Image (tube, rainbow, N blue to C red; front, side, top):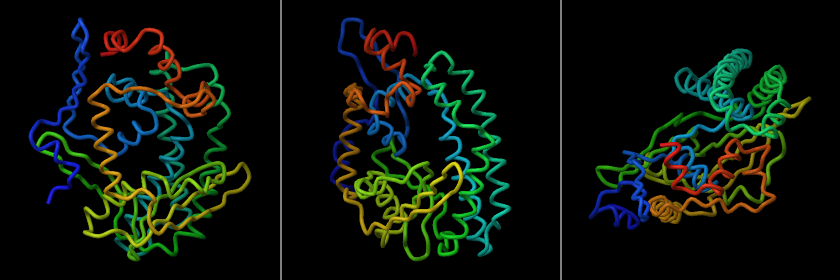
Length: 310
């Protein structure tokens, strides 16, 4: 049975084609066959980021912290895929070697992407990036891998690893996502890397947990028993692990589906407004690779942005 939130898709095509109702009749040719949950999370984080990346097709300048997180993510995915097959996975030294190779590959991509997007880069953003040294990233990551393997890894018997799930809306638009890791105890694991201890109060309200709940139920036919938010905290001198177990997300799966539908309607309606307060770090000069585009959008308007970038 289709969920109630999908009803609006039944009688018309779900084409995300924003149209500007102005004299010049500018149209954005944006007709995806699917939309990912990561794209939806991008819109939730900042609608203007979604506009720049997925509608106008402008890549954001790369961030070293993100490259490091991806390298650790790929290392753990390789480990748990192997562990699911042989019950052992990668030894600590093997996992560290995989991480170093992944990071070096990611940093080669970083340099290319930095050159490709240099027109967008603010001085503040570049100064922040220079603070992260590749050797220090290697050392911090290998320490993080080691402490993860010693403290958390032994308790995880993997079930789903990088499992794709998809929600059908109609023949033209599907919503897709991936679950990184679940174990045989029906615990859904979400592993993050960070430099500082996380804000515990915000964990239960993380919309990503609700999205994982949707995916798990789609694949398994039931909700997971609990959710583990595993943080690898990589300090300059030492790494440590923090795990927070959440019985269920504060945002229920059905509520999240309704929220997603509202996001899709907002995309169709050209709702691209950054509403972060002026002192927010998320769209600040030193953290946001799209900072200059935010300013340009305010100066010239959406019509001019479309003409320039599409």
